[in-house]
Length: 302
Length: 333
Image (cartoon, rainbow over all chains, first blue to last red; front, side, top):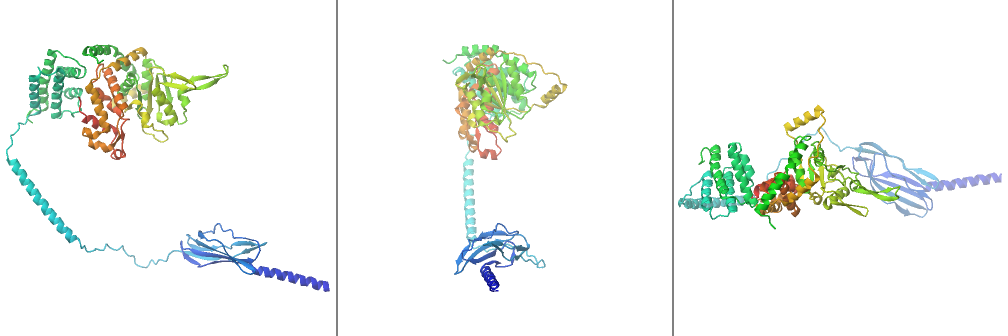
């Protein structure tokens, strides 16, 4: 009988001890609010109190469905006489509207596993009342100008000065124009070329043959330029011939081409032409220019 | 010693006689190539001035056929290298291979050992291969193992590049492009030429075999004569003016081009302009250079030597327009 009483007493004592230890473990999850608007933060607080010296593994919190972690604070500890208190605050939010649940979070203390309570969270849109009237954007508010008056005065003064200056300048120009200048006779492109050819002929006896042919070529080039037949100064002799090919007879084209080839040979190949060749080249240019002018410009004075 | 008037006349006679092969060459190539006279003339200029030519044009413009036909007409050794991203320098210049019977390494020469080398789509190969080719072009010799080999004369590299597909390409750096005497832009044929091309191709008639119409010795002689062609000081000044106008356009009344040009032509541009102008004069069977010769080849010689700024790109100004403006502004002697 005494043996039975002893066994019962021992069982009760051990069970009592265990129950005391279980009562010392406290695992709790709580939030600061259960209803948020999309994206608003929630403070999730985890509290664990266990007896001193008891081994424990912390919550494995990688993700919570429908929620996003904003910040994770460090785990805070507080030593009491018999127990130790762990505390962690996590900032979470949700971008999904609806009624969501933070599930039970598990924790192992010693050989036992403990779970927190699940927490229901309502994630909602910002309140909007469709019955309320819509308001347009506000109009631009006119601000009275205070300095513009002075600017206007300055502008008016500047304009008046400018007009006065313009009138003065114009009157000066008129005065200058009034003094008669000797009117230079305006020559046509052909007349100009003929005049220069005459001058060249007059100076032919004294001029070096290369200079003579260069000048002859230049007279032709200036004529073509003045008549807008080619884009001088980049035009070469070949382009002169090409330009008037359809206007002249075959013989005339041939003569012009030969003359220009001779010009090139004198200018760029040290060719020394005979007096007859020099005379012929001059004559070809002298005769060809009026023909071109006649074809392109019936009125030489134009 | 400067040539006298008589020297130039004698040279003129020699060139008139010797350059007859140019017509034969043109006629022979024309049997298989319709049009593309401009491209053929530029290739001949490259051949006569001993300079390499870069051809740029979309596929299908008979670039390869023209070069191949030219090589056949000269009876020169021709090789074609298709540049690809996985090409290696050894694929171009050659390499050492192990000979089992001889128990030693022997040299296997690459396709660069030819008179006419067509480097097709040169910008498709990486810089290493491009450098190997361009070095060989410059030095006219190749080193394989510890042996240096002289390349055959005449040695002419004709490189092509496609201006359209730029993805996965390795554009040639300015310093390397400068080694080509000319960059020729190959254009489309005319309507009549294209009609003729269709007829020739659709009829399925076998194209005539190109005959050798010029010997290598004739070609070498032609090169010598081209070098002797007289260039007057005025023409030299004209060339210098053009090249200087690419560097300092404002001095030639082209201030508007100043912000559009990032760099102008190098002295190599002047040299090549002079050489190509001489070759152009040779094609015209003339023993002296005239301004038209310079103008005719100026775009091809300067196109790849004048760099434009981003401002030019933004304003849709291309290098041709810039050169055109320069040629229009520089006074012809």
